[in-house]
Amino acid sequence: MKFRITLHFLCLAASVLIGLAIARHGLPKSWGFSRESKDAATGADEPAPESTGAALKRPRIGLSLDTLKEERWQGDRDMFVKHANELGADVEVLSANSDDNRQIKDVEALITKKVDALVIIPHDGAACAKAVELAHQAGLPVLAYDRLITGCDLDLYMTFDNVKVGELQAKSVADEFAKTPGKKRLVRIYGSKTDNNAFLFKQGQDNIIEPLVKSGAIEIVHEDWAQDWKPENAKKIANAAITKAAAPAGERPFDAILASNDGTAGGAIQALIEEGLAGKIFVTGQDAELAACQRIVAGSQSMTIYKPLKELASKAAEAAVKLAKRRTIFAPAELDNQKTKVPCIFLDVIPVTKDNLRETVIADGFRKAEDVFQGVEQK
Ligand code: GAL
Image (tube, rainbow, N blue to C red; front, side):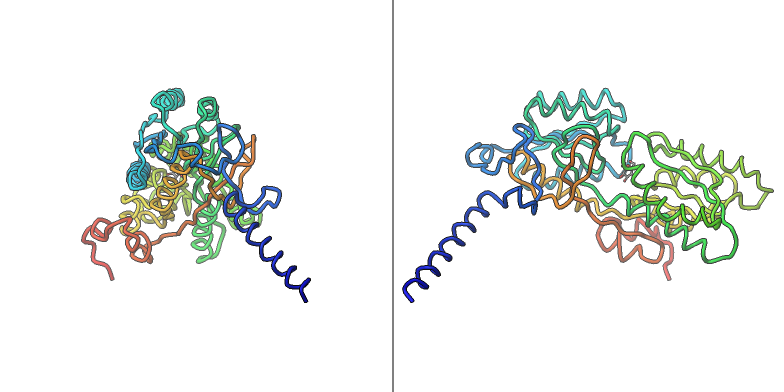
């Protein structure tokens, strides 16, 4: 009996000690349960902020953007800075205007300004590896925001499920095509080749489209990449597709445009407008830009993908503050960036059509009803 009581007591003591150890140091890596972002400076996990003193200083975060020319990135910047400030951090923002050399110089400037961590939205995912190396030489961790930086020892990547974006865009086209019999003609407008996301969107689209091409249900009549995601480049691609189809006046040259985001959709729709085809051809998008939501109400664009930027920006701000304080971050996923297995956090996305604008972008406060509907009477 005495032996059994002693044994119980020993077990209890042991489990308390283990519990305390896990709380303090997290689960041992060999157990493979949690993924922590690596601390750039040492490459090892760095749990104890108290010992670094970093906890006391008001963290400073450097935010380097590709561009602020698109509505989306202005939103990300504002929401990120707002949440970081609420967390007691300061943010230095620089935008590279889609110039790779400028972006490297921006990162050098932020390092010189003694920021504690860097958040980068790369113009060119490969060219930005240099920026990550410079940051690590200065002992700074780097979070890649929305777009992956490849070929470097990146600390953390936070984005949306970009493959799912492509799948949802392509599925909306396939569903539209399935409504009527006969082979369908599709134009594909991909994003910028410097942006790793453009390949993930295409991969998602291919998952749905390729089997239909193989079965002969769909023919790709024209496809191209829109440099720098510029609407004017997407317009040129749509113009080339219209010219190539050489359809008799008033006839549809093709049945749909699988555009990878709202900017490229807008450019393509401009080409359709000039040919009197707007609203007669199914067009996809992404980002739920205001103009795109208005086009969906007007009928010239058929759908978009809503990516809750507030969620990404606030979660990224929290992660950046933790990186700045050399705290541990739990990242449930990982992605190979051709150099290392990068800890990742992926967020979900929502398809939007004229039937669920209110339940999605408006309900979320991302868009105002009066802006989207512009007084257009809604059933
Ligand atoms: C992508 C981003 C999209 C899109 C595009 C153009 O990387 O995920 O939301 O807008 O860039 O900036």
